[in-house]
Image (cartoon, rainbow, N blue to C red; front, side, top):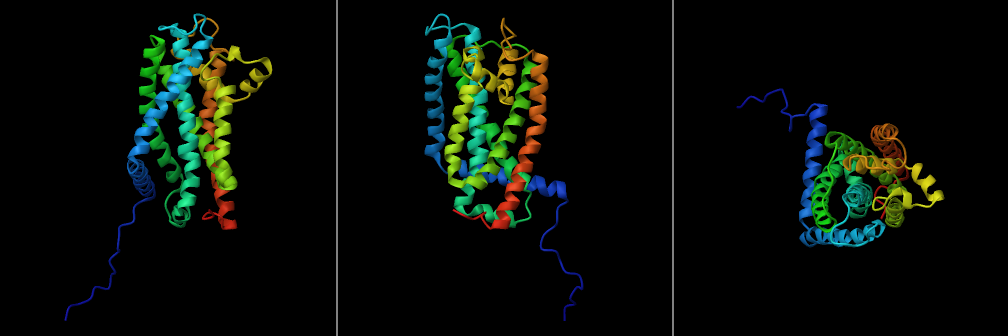
Amino acid sequence: MTAVSPHKTEPYQRLPEPMATLSAFAAMVKKEFIIQLRYPVEFVASFAQVFLIVVVLTLAGLMFSPNGVQAEADSDITGLVVYGFVLFMYLSDTLWGVGFNVRREQKQGTLEQLYMSPASKFAALASRVALTLLWTGLLSIGAAVLMSSMLGELPIHNGPLAVYILLMSLSGTFGTGFAFAALTLRIKEAANTAVNLIQFGFMIFCAPFFPFAALPEPLLWIAKAIPLSYCVDAFRSTLMGYPNGFPELAPIGVELSIVTLFGVAMPLLGFWLYRKAENQARHRGSLSEY
């Protein structure tokens, strides 16, 4: 007879907490990429959609050029439109990819399954951020090349500081996406309308495609109350080399302080709001509601 060992063999090796979170994050990123690649028509159409938007918004932005629509525009106009468009792309994709994606998983029935597992809830949101960083980064580079070919030479100054402003802006934008994900758990299908309204409000008040000086005085005061406005102003003013009249909303030192505070505080606030909305949805049993 074969002796039976008194010790039971573990079916799997338990990972320490940091490694478990990292492993869950890697698996969720892989899942997001697989979903993206399973829809090749949508994959290709997103490129075409961006380039059509680029053409329309570029021509619209040229209306604010002193020379109007010409083959070559002033480099300041080029930077104003192109760099504002980059932040607009990230905000839009964050709202749809991070925030509204929660609603998509809720409709597919996978959200409740995810929250019944011991996987990190932060990793679930951060995995969507990773996809947005890569995908939107590629689209932004392609859009910037196309827009600069239409508008003229793209000004590039103060690279390290501009990278810092971009990172803080993206951090704050992702925090906004977390907060919108919390709102999505509450309002469900109405989130589709909400994200369109937020995008429209960003295009008006944060002036990504035109100078803030073009805004009427009442709208300018609203713009100054939105942290993303300072992200747009500081980012493009820095890369344009602070031409006369830029930055428009405040001195660059003040704008850097606002952008830094936004980049540090908004992810924490957004994730706290998301966890609070998630716990309330659990108690109501609405995580799986269609």
